[in-house]
Amino acid sequence: MRPPGQAALNIPAPMIPLLFGLVLVVVLVTLVALRVEQSRQDQADLGPVRNNVLQVCASCGKVRDGSGSWQAVESDPRQLPGVICSHGICPECVRKLYPDLADRVLDEPP
Image (tube, rainbow, N blue to C red):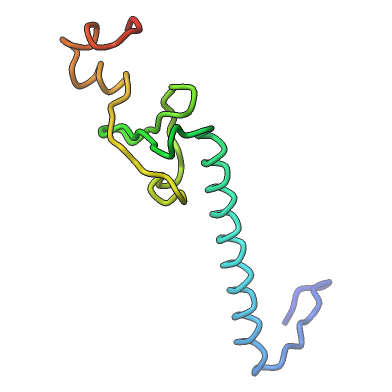
């Protein structure tokens, strides 16, 4: 018995798998659209990449943007079309991994 005020859905049994499939398709299309949008945002966050070479920190995975600052990105930068990834190490990781050398190799104070 239904609670008062709740309408009944008279869906024929053969239609239930079709409706489930439709809902699944809508969810998958939405997830793909979100992934594409995140990838576009990551590309925009990187700014201009010099000569299509993107420097990635070998320790934490942050990438160096066009202005020289290091930023975390949500997607894998190797998946960006036309971009070649190179290794590097960001200042934070230099300080963490090589504290004795950090002041000598970094231009900026800790």
